Amino acid sequence: MRSHFRGGSIREKAYIHIQQRIANGTLVAGGGVPELLLSKELKSSRAPIREAMHQLAAEGLLEQNPTGGMVVTQLKREDIIELYELREALEVYAVGKVARAALRPSDKLRLQRLVDEVAGLRRELERTNRNALNSRGMARFIACDLGFHALLISMASNSRLQKIVSDTRLLIRVFGIRREGHDAAALKSIQRYHQQILDAVARQQPETAMAVLAEHIRASRRERLDEYDRWKREMSLRDSVRVAFNRRGMAQQA
Image 1: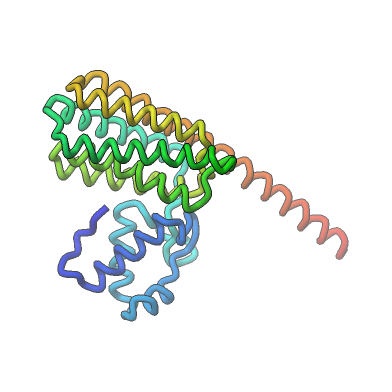
Image 2: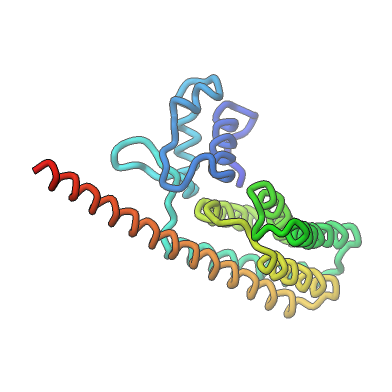
């Protein structure tokens, strides 16, 4: 995602700084945005920080807190569905366009390296007998996954489409940052999808590339929705325990 600010101003730096903190999970969904702390970190007044925050709010990453200030957007289940529908419509169109043209050897090599990196993560996981990737492993995976999809989109040569998809994926990550590390089965599945997409693009088979990418995105949507449902159940259980604990405390005081 890129801002509308230019010239490397403090607003631009604040915009990028806040966006990065959201993307890496330092600022969590539903949590407040510390305006004063940000101004100290960037050694600036609070005015440009607020301007950057308003721009991020307009793009859907932040929202106004009823009690004052801004918080990182907390996606609802319907938001996740809509974002994935948008992503599917645009990415599937883009990969079809890319697959109708000859794939340059240098682009094929770059895409293949990103596919192979996921395979390497799976082998490393199996070799160390861990159940799932740790935070560092997930960071490497996310870089490969985003890199693969972003490179395909960029090859469609449509800057507006590229920005919308980038914005959509970042919004999805606002929730997805909660995900647990992928296990070997998940990595194998993603690697297989990516390899099939790459092979179809290289063979100039747009229908196949579009069908596989659509299936890949739908599978990812199911995973995110399952995660969301588990998270909601956990939140509901915590709230129930908190209410029960408070009632017990009040009864003891009576």
